[in-house]
Amino acid sequence: MSSPLVDQFQRRISYLRLSVIDRCDLRCTYCMPERQTFLPKSEVLSLEEMHRMALGFIARGVTKIRLTGGEPLVRRDMIELVRALGREVGSGLEELTLTTNGTHLASFAGDLRRAGIERVNISLDTLDRDTFARITRRDQLPAVLEGIAAARAAGLKVKINAVALRGVNEGEIAEIMGWAHGLGMDLTLIEVMPLGEVEQDRIDHYLPLITVRAALEQRYTLTPEDHRTGGPARYVRVAETGGRLGLITPLTSNFCDGCNRVRVTATGQLFACLGGREQVDLRAALRSADPETALEAALDEAMRIKPERHHFRIDQRGAEPALARHMSMTGG
Image (cartoon, rainbow, N blue to C red; front, top):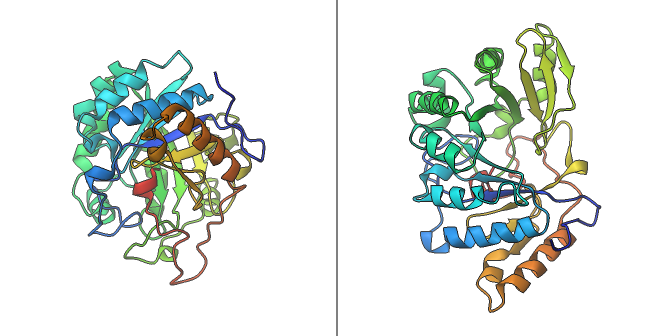
């Protein structure tokens, strides 16, 4: 193995979040505008290039890869990349996972499990069909629930991710938690992030998770746990449901001191921080005359420029987003 990926703050980078496509079949109001412009397909890396790039990361000590989007399952033949990477599990790669909105999961769950994925995160902010349609601008809740059922039937471990939204789903969070835990699924709550221009003011729907936790503690017994899944979530055990609740708090409780992640877009741009502009062009490295050497150098540069922390803020009406880049481009 080549030298491990260690940034200037002595954080070991062992987790790659790889966006296989920026396109999505939903239009979540906090994520993107209705008339979102996606990248031309000519700019997107081929699946073979993504595979070669991932092997380069594994050689530098990355042990976990999460495939993201956009919505990864809308990319044609994406399952071939899953199969190729799945063969690396146990040979340097410890875990291959997927984040999906679930709309196509019913068709892919069995293939994903056979290809080497054991765990999936499914983004679902509500169990109410009308609210789902209002958030996503698409009436797809039945398809998502079907996908969740198919994933569980295929033997996939399922975790539900829900963005906490003031005035939208805050009154439903306890219900979502009870439903998820009742089916043996963990639930992770996420604070809305100021990434990309959207058609609403995010401050209207920003719900600090410290507020959510305080409300839950009026009804439930929450006990902190040391459980980690490689990401930024911090977990508590809910005594009354027996389930696990995760909290991702990019605004109210910065978690950057333990960051072990980098993100690569579908065009091969490595972003050293979700909330930063620092980036390295891996596509250029992959398409150079000496791709192996160029990729090594690019990864070294990424470690040099990775910032200490992000600086997300949602505290002023009409404020510009922290970054113009939408979450769908970088991957969740």
